[in-house]
Length: 16
Image (cartoon, rainbow, N blue to C red; front, side, top):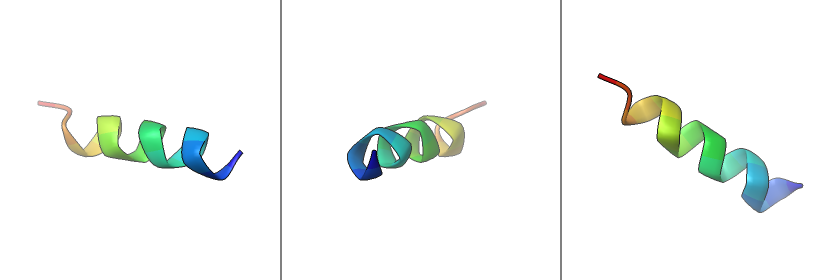
């Protein structure tokens, strides 16, 4: 899944 991975990547970037 392309969008699925994108969502995960974005979440990783928002990790604090």
